[in-house]
Image (cartoon, rainbow, N blue to C red; front, side):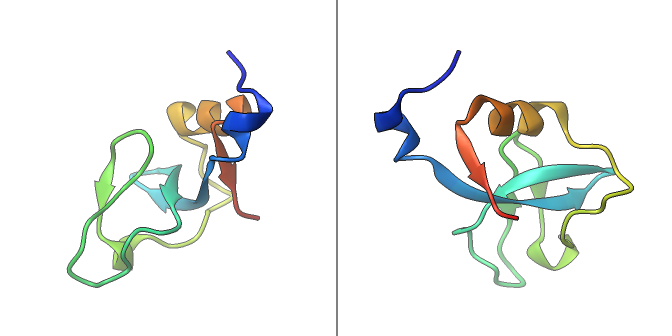
Length: 77
């Protein structure tokens, strides 16, 4: 289930972040306010201040990893 070139141009930019013992993809353009809530692609909710960058010692969330592998999103870094 790949995407074509036209759809690829509309991909959202995401970053990996460590939450709940896994790395999840979070949209880059979500608010970073201390009071806002951010949502990972898989639906996990969190607070931005609790979201460090990717932790290489943790596994990737399977749902988020598939979105990256499928080309549905573009991951930073």
